[in-house]
Length: 383
Image 1: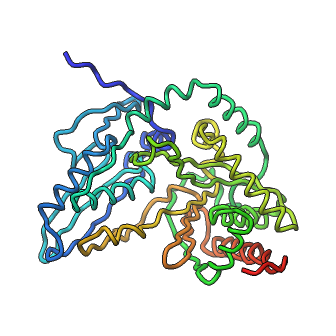
Image 2: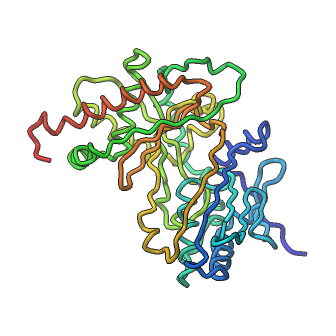
Image 3: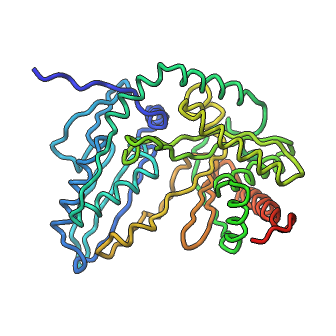
């Protein structure tokens, strides 16, 4: 008799999704269609590349039982799993690749890793091993370590604070209503050079600058002198984590106090982010009872870019995402896109915020970014 595969807890964000699924089974489902011109692609090679890439990532063969524990279960049909499906349909001049994923499987970086692996397989290149199972085994042992306990204690002490984590909502959070997603886009391309200069001079990332500006906007919106929020950290520092398709990202909390001195604020956010990363092995914001507060925090995410994919892509492709009403999975997320343009995309619950409220918050954030970026000019530093 073959030995049963070991069962592991879900990773923190996946556990969060699983818990929400118990009340809303369809939550966090995402669908898209990738249209590829038949004349630019070898259909047989592409289909095989998709199979090869999926088989390279154990998460697509993980089964989750009724208690929310996962185990490796080799699949006869890797294209159709418990939380994903991929099918290829030939239509007129196109191959239409229908993709269905649930967020329980992985984070934004994971999707990029899979896309890279499909293209590498199509081009006949070797794929790097995904150490998802080894990571789960390591993590269970690490949870028993003194370091893990120290990180937990530090976070619980640091963030036992009373301050807003989002702009005051127009509709109370206690209202029993369905949250519907809305979006608002703001273009910061004209400020890219000045932001880069601040980033290099004060050793802060774009995520740090926009997180600081967002925290200041929360204070200004709510009339307070301190605020907290979260930012999405990709993690993946360890060699075994580099090519993992899974929810390895961490929503790290930061706490900001108002100050009239720009350099003090920049130093404050730099320290907060460094300390947050240093203690992030304990997923403070994603575990109960902390989720009762931090699930509603503004979350700043720097989205992965696909700058390297075009050079790997020997065929033309277009991604189509159905334009339909979607539930809001977060109260307010701020996504940073640093591609040809530098933009912020606000994803918010239209049920809880009026559009003019989000516009007002976005204007506050922009003014804060303009004010912070002027620190270079204030100090007579040449950009």
